[in-house]
Each structure stands twice: as structure tokens, then as C-alpha cells.
Amino acid sequence: MVGVFRIVDLVNRAMKQLKPVGIDVCLVDESSAPERSVLHVHRSRTRQEMLSPSDGLDFDAAETRVESDRFTFAGRSWGIDCRPTDAYLAHTRSWAPAFVPAARCC
Image (tube, rainbow, N blue to C red; front, side):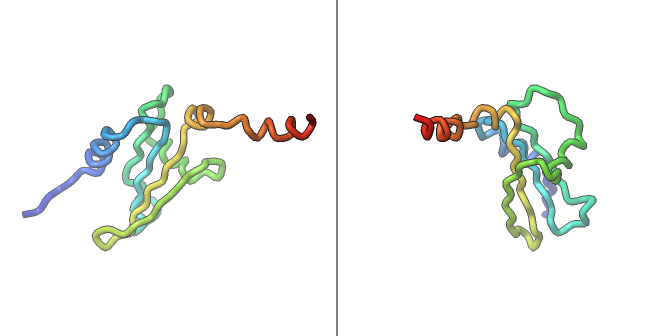
């Protein structure tokens, strides 16, 4: 018996179990040719703006902050790239660095 899985269905089902916090996720097949490496991009459900399907490729942009993890499964190398949305960065930004110079003045 052979089973066929659609990557988009697997990723979306897994992501529905998580609370949306503002992280985009990109699943990459590291074993394939570069032009076919992005398998699926899951955009955070907290996003307000509409994005086109090609926007997933900006995970490689130099100015994009991305956390990545690589693993091997079924004889292939896979990667998961996670990128925070602007809203996530704004929400989690700390004011502490701004207070350090002010504390030295007092």
C-alpha cells in the first residue's frame, strides 16, 4: 500500500494546533535543486495584509531575520525557517535598552 500526503495539508493541520503569535514558517527540501527547494510557506494567521504566493521566497533576503533548523527524515535533508512578522517584533520589542543610557545620566 502506498500513501500520498500533500505537504500543504500536513503543515496547515499541524499549525492549526498552535496559537498564532506572528511567526511565518517555511518548509524547505534541502536535498532538491534550489529552484524547487521551498515546499510550503505558512503565513502567520495574525497577518493583516494580503501576501502573494511568491512572497515566501523573501525568507532568503538579507534583511530578513530568520531562525532555521535542519533535520534528516526519510533519507532527505529538510529545513524549517521561521520568520517573525513586523507585528510580532513590535509587540516583543523591549524598552530596556533605551533605559540603560538614561540610567547612566542619573
